[in-house]
Length: 332
Image 1 (cartoon, rainbow, N blue to C red):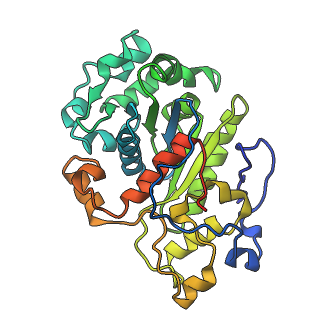
Image 2: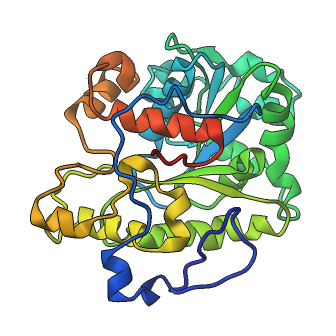
């Protein structure tokens, strides 16, 4: 399968087979930066507000977990943040305790889209320093009601009715959690944000899911607008990387292709596989599968509020600073 790679912005040209990497390319990469443990207080950010979508055309990659904790870490940096749950499954909403709002269909984002309701009428304070526009169980019906027309205009509802009125004046950052399938809702998320965080989980379908997302979701919209991938995020890792595990395979694929390097966060960056194999490097790159993350969802809390000492907060903190800066910022 052909995989469109990345340049400074997601380019409109260039088709390179991912499997065309030579064996030496798989073993080594250029940048010498390793996973961070330091504060990000020195990161230089731009002055613009920004909306970002967490999306991937594959389920089970932890999109909702990343969206919730990204919003929380942005809020922890004294930003006004809105999380929009566009996934009809409502994992982010339920994971923050909005079960009743999810099942209550009297007033939803559909009223904002079609009945000129004020978007703030369906926004709630989570109690964790950021707001949420929750999903609802009738969101699939809302999607069916979106007028089927050309590829662009029916996909501009979220931008026109929610993001444009609120971004900048009310919120510094807006984060959307998108469905795991191509739909009018996912198109609306991309059109409204134009900035993407793409999570990948280990497994045989990891790269295939990334390819599908680019070819089926991003590429059609590139004919109308620029789309920037801010970060590729290896998520839900639990295995060793000094052996040929699925974790290692995913990290090798992402770290070994030069065209992807500007999108790999420091916490997932590996440049010395020889050191890994020799046992000299003891880092655990990527967002690791920690019990605290699972328990935080069960307690209906972001990770920071459930377990402020969890080592994975460093990863979510870096993601927040990537969104602030509009790019991955290398250390050292």
